[in-house]
Image 1 (cartoon, rainbow, N blue to C red):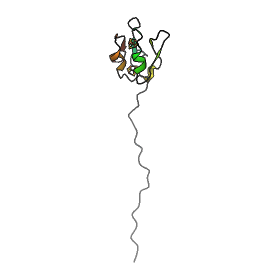
Image 2 (tube, protein in one colour):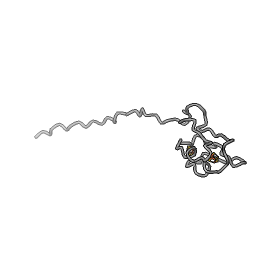
Image 3 (tube, rainbow, N blue to C red):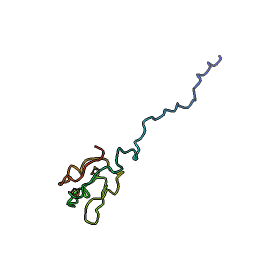
Length: 94
Ligand code: SF4
Ligand code: SF4
């Protein structure tokens, strides 16, 4: 008895699916390069923002006031401006 012709298995590679979702680039910031504005004349160097920023964006200057040392790490979580007792921090992006 003759063998039935075997089913041809397609061995084409799967079609490439282009990932059109582009990761946001950190350089794509609106407006100012800094994510935040600090009003230094209102800041009393209480250290709250420096100590509790989850991304460690700030470093203290010699007076203990926050310098935005790592602006691209800021996630705009809002902790700093919501907890600053002197309302000395505002977002440049929100
Ligand atoms: S918004 Fe959040 S991540 Fe950005 S500096 Fe303030 S506390 Fe840090
Ligand atoms: S929380 Fe406000 S007052 Fe305290 S160090 Fe930061 S900016 Fe200054």
